[in-house]
Length: 324
Image (cartoon, rainbow, N blue to C red; front, side, top):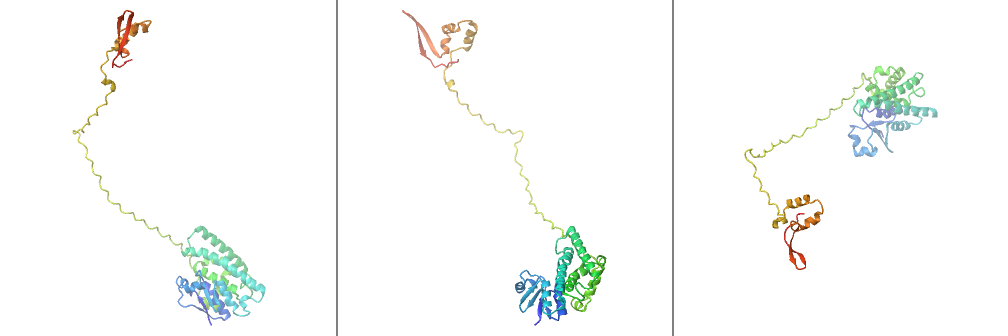
């Protein structure tokens, strides 16, 4: 029974398992009519990989996802497979270079390429960091390959398959000749690998990128349509009274009457009292009480009548106000 690999025909991560299958004489078939963004969102696919990533390998014992895990599974199906070396140290070195290919090479290529493809926001600083990291990784690889044809031992291993597939995307999309020429041993290694019969059968012909993809232009923000302003009605003119026309004056309200106004007029002449006060130099009290005006000041009308025992003063109340 053939194993079924769910991925697109040009997926570089699917190439890992397919090339390993060619070296191991294991039958692996790509699922037909796979559409990225459609096929990997179906309920059937999500049962195999809940996050919808590709590739996924369908096996008799259940699905396997993550490309390196799938490549390991396919390689292990053949006993004593030379793709895993001939000793424990070979096995360790193969795993070592597979991790290096993922964390140092593939990750750095992706951080440089994917923003230029519009998959992530572009940032010049992040790109410079990614390029520096990639150059450091390729520099280390170049040093190793200066004395080695393959990564481990003297033949193709799973480490070579994984690293070449990770370099493949960079070579065809963004790693131009002017860039890779700094690493001649990496160039020689890559072209040697992709021209191996089992590689070529899966990948086909490879053409190196001629230019770095341009930075995608930012979409111009859509102009906000201003709502049409409703026509403002001209304010109605308020009728102003003509200059000739004077507003009708209100009649003044009658003032309340003072209670004192209800009393009869006083008989007291204030000037006489003032004159008496100013002309009296001493004993004003004695002089004042003898003056006729005194009896008008107090508001009591006083009369004096003669009696056998002497003079007696009598008084009669009068409704005259006291003005002092």
